[in-house]
Picture 1 (cartoon, rainbow, N blue to C red):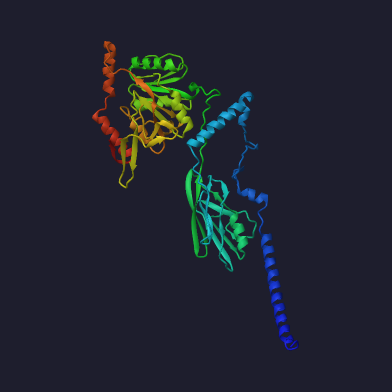
Picture 2 (picture 1 turned 120 degrees about the vertical axis):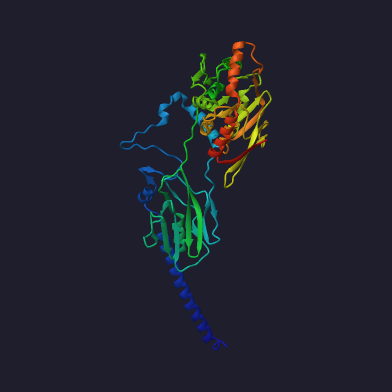
Length: 495
């Protein structure tokens, strides 16, 4: 029996040895290929890849810190050198607090990066890839998984930028460096993914905001994903001062026309509660009277220049973070608490917040419909919902002529100087989609008596004022025609 099985056994052993030899040869070959591939997986030298991120001599790659490097013909100003050293710490703290509030009001438009998993078999970023104009970034999430090919070929295409890779490989493997089409050819999938992980995108056209729809192709599979080109704007911060006094944060603004007796009553009431706050008066009266008091700036305009032109002038001279708008016939009372409105703006992302005039908040919604032949705008009185954290406040589209607002945002919207008479809601129409507005019922201002003046001279002035104040049919027609063209409105409804 032993002899009978010896030949087959020897044969089996021989076959096993041959298979093992083949297997060992394959293993060594695979190990060699892996070792070679791993040796191929290296990055460009620092000198080479740094050149991809430099524009006009400045390193523009994403980083946590930047610096202004000294160079020939370059003037460098280190801003802290211009701050009194004893005040630097407190100013930095205030600046950081203001910046955090600014970020709350103007959140970054950059989206979180989302990567499509390789189920098709490409992986790529769905959103969140953003680059500044003329800057260079690495595109995250590119990869190929789950397919086996004798030769892998991947093509990346851009339209507004150029492509490259930080991988240090031959031109036979990567073709088209620095161009809008990048071709990768390799039989090694690991090397392919190494190259893809280090693909760079360089914006080559200066644009403030644009989208480059990238194409990512491998054999029968094609994907598209966006690269956002966006130039961030600089923050605009106003120092509220170390003590954050109300007078360092808020300026009161008003527009007057003829009614100096009303204006003087307003100023007197303001000084009763806020003796140090600055007041700015825009005045387009025919025969101006001098208003000479401490902390009052009085600006004279051409006669009858108009309501919104006066608002623009007044706000253009504000140097504080906020301005409070009041009409010249209002009266401050014990319920005119600017601090309450200030607290709302400091603790929320609202751009402006209104109060009430003798209990009337006059808040309204603006509802917008878009269509091919012109758009529709609907004004409805009321609000959208309550403001979180403030039980007496709501979120709305427009408020009464008594409000506290961020100066910078109001300047951004602007008051259209074409509107000379009885204009109010038009400012909020222009601010739709720009201004976030609130209204609080627990802060109010009084209104001066509407009864005719007993003094004949004052009665004559008020009669003259009414001839300019009343809205004529011609003015209504002008405003609606302006909405038609400027705002591309097909119709406008109120209720």
